[in-house]
Amino acid sequence: MGVISIVGKIVLVVLNILILLLSLIMIAIGIIIIAGKDVYNSLLDKFEDDLQESLSSLGLSVDTSDISLTDLILPVAYALVALGIVMGALALLGCIGGCYTLKIVLIVYTIATGVIFLAQVIIVILVYADKSAFDNAVKPRLKDTLDSYSGIEGTDAKTLAWNALMNYEGCCGVDNYQDFQGLSTWPPTSVGGQMVNLQTPVICCRTKSASYACAEVGTATTANNYLEVGCYDKLYNLIMDHALVITIIVLILAFQFVMLFFAIWILCTMDNKIDII
Image (tube, rainbow, N blue to C red; front, side, top):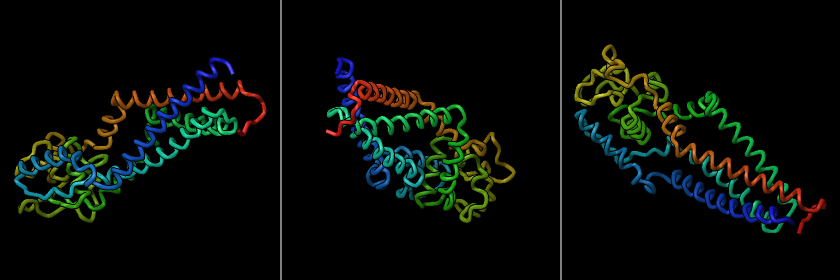
């Protein structure tokens, strides 16, 4: 085995150990999210403080102690756990195949990693070139979390989460205010003891005050309300266009390409017979 093959084995093993550690971190994060807000409660303090400040400006007193973003990000948590398990299993195969030069293991590892690499490249191209397929998969799930939304005075976890998100990001619904139309729990007939005829949730108002005209039918406009600003696009742009996220995606793809290259190199420099020990 040549020098390049030896270096390739070392690189393959080291990178797969790093991937294995990353997969464990992803699984841990997913489990923490699924476990609920008691585990990551400190992360919600900023959302809760901002929401309480807005509620005070609206002249309202609402118990926000049950706030939780779990329902909104639960699909992401399950995806992290599943992806972490798959990545960990492949990384383990890569470590074993690289350490002991097991041809069968390396063949399985190369094929599986190659398929996943190509799938990831296709997904990244679709997400950044034409994200409609991604939107169609994610948006319906987000809209399902609005099923029990009850307005600015709601105290259930989903309502509080949406109020905190819309208040923090300056947005209204997944696509726009029409996402709230037809819900069995919204709109309320009164807010803070005042009779109202709401077109959008009060939290969608650009300026928070004890007057709710900015959210009512006939007086809510794009000038005083975020009614046409969807939270989905704001979150998508915040996450997917973030330099750190793009850097991580590029590094992951680069790592996988390097691992594939050296796995194939090692296989090509091995004997033609299939070694099992």
